[in-house]
Length: 396
Ligand code: SAH
Image (spheres, rainbow, N blue to C red):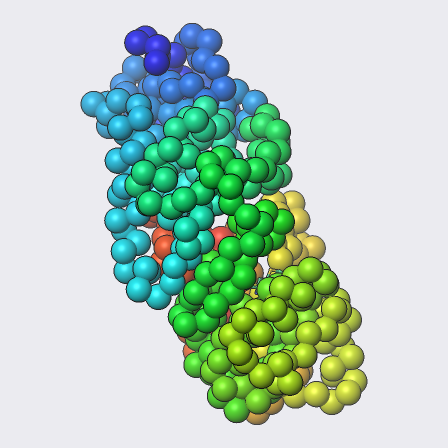
């Protein structure tokens, strides 16, 4: 590494967020760049008066011009530094291991490793590299991760749109070993097959672990509706939890096929489960026309608001599905409703859901606020990391 790192000098008055340990330096905050840093190169971020603020990875193509590795001037940003960060991230999650052999091991900015996501699926790791900084260190991730976890293979799923904002191409494939497309995991005593090569995200919605367990605990004897079911996470929890019947909806035939296989894998009674390839918006209305009622409904839609400018449309979509779901709730029925749009705050989400309840003339109580499982812990300095929010509501 260059012994004289380039410097990003911030504008007067624009150093507050970095001083507060927020890891992002926006292009608008930069007064000048001293040197000619390459994409992902480590630079020092300094205040107008030259005071050290952070070591950061430079990303000239992005609105986020740099992401901080460290706020300590004594740190050296090298391979031992990265190793220590990964070790710390793994050690923090020791408590999750008792419940599942699948978990998020590295959660980007919140683990002090901006742009790096690592999910563990039994003996296979899936890596997402989302920033120029994490990309620059790409050769070390595979070897480091296998050494520190004992995992046999590492698969890369850097096929996410945010990479384009960093000037990076989409990339997928084995980094180490010969990871197969499908991997088997076990979470809270339920086995799932996960498609790490073609599935959504890195293959499975690990962030919903605790909420799947909650659904299982509410399902006994209930007619259950799981809308946006993907490969059946909530459906299997409900079946295992003793649901009378589970109706699951998704538009993806591949996801539904895998969900059916997951039922068989667990020896659960397939007759208690229906899998319908349908659009949730239309199907909820059909169920209403048919006079159907459910004791437990899960609404876990895809990210309706990828960015701030989609929030208004997303709010309408969230309101619509929640309103129609509320009309389908049996007396004292439970609704677990989620949003994974980072641009929709928990506060706004609750307002949208309250608006839906008012229009549906539904009398509901918030039993609990829900969020991502603790292996998706968010740095207190990085509220942007808190994307998943949900409400456990119960009808009167
Ligand atoms: N609850 C799931 C994750 C849901 S991800 C779990 O815990 O594993 C969102 C899912 O919604 C995806 O599987 C996607 O195929 C599906 N989807 C997106 N739009 C849809 C629509 N309009 N109707 C039904 N399913 C939809």
